[in-house]
Image (cartoon, rainbow, N blue to C red; front, side):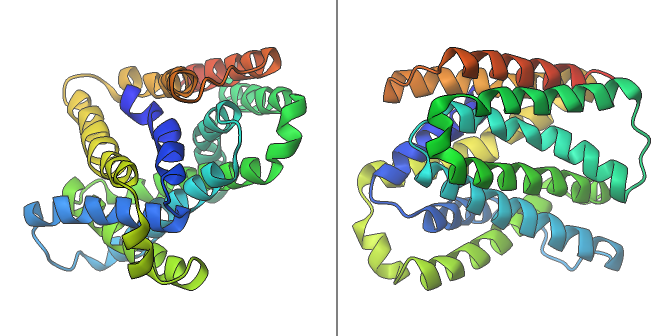
Length: 273
């Protein structure tokens, strides 16, 4: 969870090192693809997997990275952004309920509600009024992440390395194209990136995207998903701790209270059946 939580402060640090947000996301996905493709058997999957695979790749590879780094580039305070990202779990549940017609228990509905109440509390932080655009972007990221998890349910029989390599390839193509259009010449941008930027994007692509998620998949082999997944709710704790260490940012009391409500709700949400 430390690795997942570090994505936010180190992403912001990398963006501060002469890195544009769309290019940051493109390079992160590029690292994922380059690292995984040598271990993949390249072949066209069964027709029933093509649409979910494309949907997953667009949402997770392009959508999540685009909105995440656009949000971080606009944000001046990071703690509320890190906490709001937790709404990906309630979004996934809501999408599953409306589109897949999955049955959601009353307890889960209550916890989804309380998670949004926590976000409303954070919105009362006076500083958040300067972060409205960044907050909207991170909510879009959470929605894309939740939608990608719904698509991933149809891909359980595919090799995880192939799925993530496809995500990296599609995400890279989309984001590098958008970067060329909206951020300027990509080759010129690459020349302007400082060493700290390269270190951060390498860390995001290899350490967070590959090592962090692979460690979770490794735990799934030995422990039930219901035992491992609730700890996903703890990544904002590590993220906020790193934000304090790197940027000396201290969350306000209302952010602490709202964050506690959100994290507690998400933790319980993933334990309730």
